[in-house]
Image (tube, rainbow, N blue to C red; front, side, top):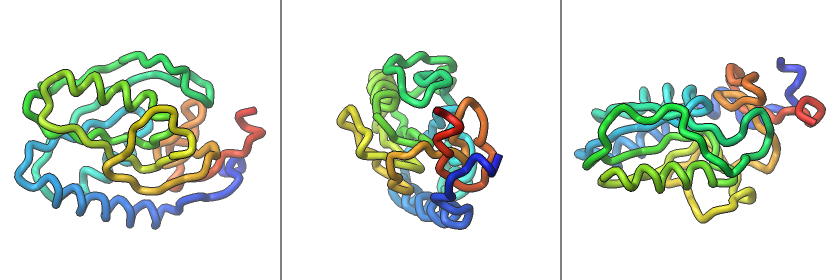
Length: 178
């Protein structure tokens, strides 16, 4: 598996430090609010697990699963809800936790859909941001790292459901997905 990695982009230690920083910032910003952290499966599950432990205020969590990529490397533009949220969103302060903000199409769709459900607020926290790939006007309120337009895997991010378990974020060799 590691032979498929061109280079390590973000080390395990850098990830741990950034998650702690984000947890402190979210804890400050959401003090006294009705925080519901929503993980967009599957990619954000590793980040969400670490982030929720770094948050020091009361919060609840829920998960949703969507599909927009299939086994390809680019978004299809069509978002399919596989698993919706279980918790009522009325008067909730929602924090969407995502692994990577890329084209923004999927996250924009999810955010607009969830705004219709009576949330008090919706913010976005992403581990990775690829601003040069953005196709819609959406920005993260909390962002870990800005990454170049390369195919990244690890720490929850995958290619064809593999590499999620790498403890770092690495660039996948093009020969693997070409």
